[in-house]
Image (cartoon, rainbow, N blue to C red; front, side):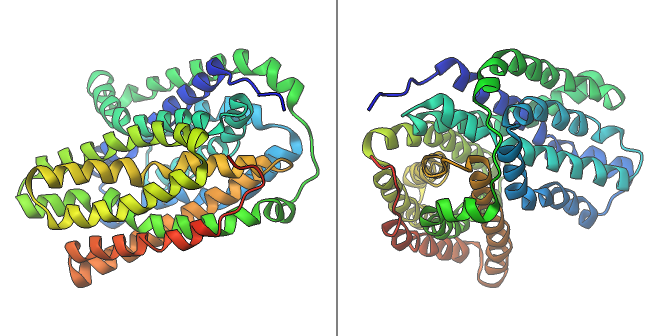
Length: 384
């Protein structure tokens, strides 16, 4: 069987577009104090903003089906960074709370439209090294979480609130670059289909069902560390700075994990890599909770590396098994991921309120171990 070539240039370009796109999606949190002051929002109203932006993720399977059936994956990937940037660059210009909600909801649709078909392009350009391609792609998105807030604060300081919209120019240039780089290739390979969500589900159900179990188990670890880590560290140390530094360390090693895991899974096998990270992650969380000093810092780094590293491997598995409905299949996977994460954050918060943050981390780690039985049931058509 002929080995398919890994197209480094195109994979890197799409990963760069992921970085640019997700920089804009990270604007809300750092600009929220300005928005609250300008529109005189309550904390409840402010909290609703993020939820409204995430609601369109429920449309992921339908977006994927549309991309597959119309052969429009290329156009969705090209245009989405610009539309997301337009809506997010105007949030400081919103004249009322309801205008802001509309802008964020439209941005959420654009975010979903970008993230559903893009892994399909990455899979095409990665050939037989889909894990490596997904790792590079996800690294772009993870890096944006660090750079985005800093960029937003710097931009508003330099441009002012009234001219903040100027920053959308970077995304427009990225879309132009994508158009001229991806257009000819995708024009030849885009195929109009007549698929359905039922067909997409049946094509990947042998991997989607166990992956859903893994996502659910992992989501508790992901929620507890990603959302409540700063609160936990601040309460233990009395320092908000230490809380921020802990989250930065966690996210930084998460980027490294994302970059490595997919590539390793090309060499060692998807199931084997998932097994090791899903075993190590909950153990690292438990040691993190009960340890002190250097060991605690080390376990925080290990947790970030392992908890966040599973996504590119799972994306590769989905694409390897979704020959006929790749975008719809990815949409189903992303919808499950969104639902699991959303529910886990709420439940983790309830556990934290009832039993304390330390016990919340312990429970989340123990739930993390339940991913292993689902992993053992994971079977794929194409496997290393």
